Length: 560
Image 1: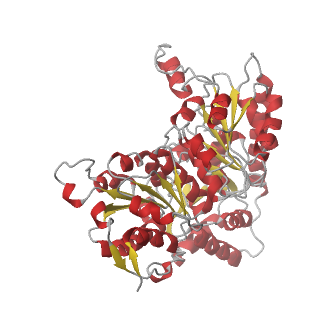
Image 2: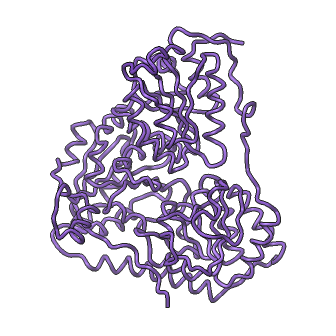
């Protein structure tokens, strides 16, 4: 056994799990931990300008890399400021371990300075929230935390450590490899009988469709999912927010569903007689939780790692608890055993290809409706697509103008599309983008946000400059909170309040921070400017002034 300081024990517990980045702000309760990273190359402490930015960056890192990350923050408001970002990790299934340096135990339950029930606050947005009660148990509690964060449906965990268990404390401990205290490989296979019933149902379907969820990305199962779709001639639609779950260039791909997606995708889902919901909750934004998209008579084969999700939103014909990769491989084997030559459905394939072509025609046609002195936000997206490398990582903030990306950008590589994951908090765009670039430094990375969202976390430009993170942050500036203004226009007799914004020039803001700034007000200049920005080895901000745009929801399918 080696004797080590309590703070070093925390760092070594993180390193044992392969954590190479921690995010947060320093504080008197955590100096014992963060000072143990001084001079180390194998683990870094990325100090942000606000704790919310730290949580967002940790989320982006984990989603891009597939590895866990950690936040380290001090007592009271220092940790409370993480909650918005941690709630994104909760919604987005990201293994972010939050380390809260809490006040000393003598301060607790006496209304001491910065004493709050952090465990109680974080319980609703974490898989596990615990408080260490003895210094000697720090390693044990981190083993517990990583088991929870990385097993089943992944998610964030809080480890609260009172200051008096850290300061001037040592323990005898030898770090262990993760396989000594948790199952490192945990591919949960589906029930064999359920697999067989599902395979028969899919083989005998007339119009089967794959709804490809985030579980496919978590399980690195894209190739397996596509193989199942090809063997069964299934149309492919990603669940909302997971456009990168299957390659968008594939002949069986229709488009993304949802209010900001493609009506053609909703029509394909409505036409399907059997849906393989692989690694998806059948979430609200994909299905609207009613029969406008999925008909009552449609049979659903739902696969999810979390048993609680099976049949939660729609009744299922077959429910399979399991890992998306393992189950896809089982289904493919069952289909090939039954039909070694595969299944041919020329009529359905033609229908799928017609819907996909209609979507492409619709997007081309909208570019012909240009007008006015200020470009429409739709005009920017074909220009983005010209300049983006095939594996470029794109983070989309909440909001209207950037929300057009769901139906207009193209993804063929998993872990290249990042968004607010049903959480919907403004300001995550740039920070999550910074995290993705740290997670996959070999890939280009951009973030898309509106002027409102960018101002939520603009201070993290300083973090990007100090840490030399070459993210291109694109601000689609329409001078308003677009969704809320649209609502006030349509339903409140144009009584506008709190929706019109007065902004600085964002390219100039970037320059003040030490980043590069670009200002592009003509569509034909966007691609060249973006190529230039992507070629830089430094952070940059590109402001693109666009017209206000109030898009309606994606059209629902024709029930006739």
